[in-house]
Length: 92
Image (cartoon, rainbow, N blue to C red; front, side, top):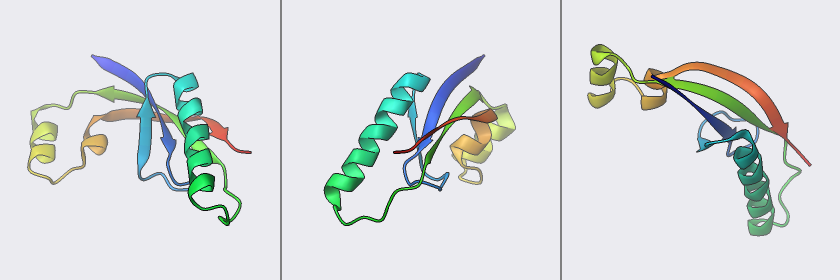
């Protein structure tokens, strides 16, 4: 079984870490809120770059993939993401 979620860059220009939401619209709202929070916490912050939004298709790993996660040899996202596509940017 595959699931689709959306993730946005918490730090503009960096794909780690990502924050996740169930829909593209929710992801866009949360990314805009994150940008507002960054500015509120640091009014002198340099202009923010665009934040990428991805559509991620997730699937449960096979036994070997799960063991690699449990034994901390593979990050969970690496084991469950089967497709990742850039679907948008959030900018000012």
